[in-house]
Length: 225
Image 1 (spheres, rainbow, N blue to C red):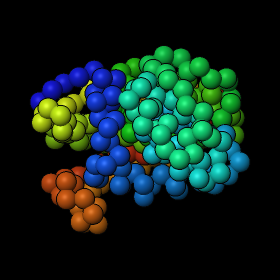
Image 2: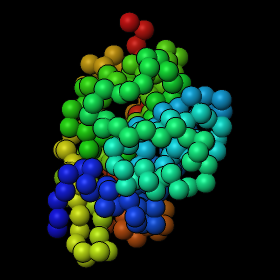
Image 3: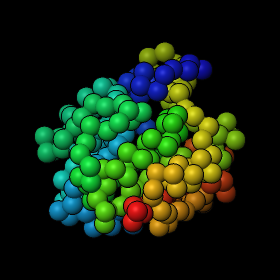
Image 4: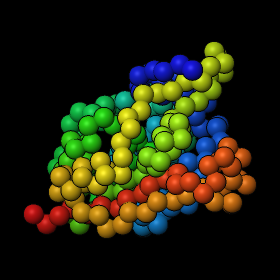
């Protein structure tokens, strides 16, 4: 096992990331479209975009997309994909204030990123700041129950043959909820999704977690005040 800083880990992961069978991503793909709704003509920002798996789907759905990540390796992969010239990619550490204008986006999206965010309060506050008054903040995350089972983001590095773990933080659901409240956001929906027989059949890696919650997904709105 090799533990790395989050940025270093994802730089190493970038080369093989899109080719892996990831049951968490498979499960999220079922859920995300319903949370996003129709994004045609909307301005959307993807925070922690990685190789662009969500950014390009938003683009194909007709959104104007801005995408941020601090891993140059991940962004380099994203920029090689068809249509990359139509997305505004930015290198940025999400632990710092976002280099974006107030109320600039109709959808603020953060997918499978929260486990790598140490300080949740400023992150949610920044998501609220850049979201338009009638917009929505969409957040998905690996369910905290997975850490109780010893699971966190990891990959097998083909170069070294070792399992590499980018740094993760053991945030709990209560940490998510309180960060939402303190940021001046309200929860429109919050759903936990467990590994079911269908997912286990599609992704054998998920079988050992059958019945356990794997994903948490939230749709948030700005409070009026």
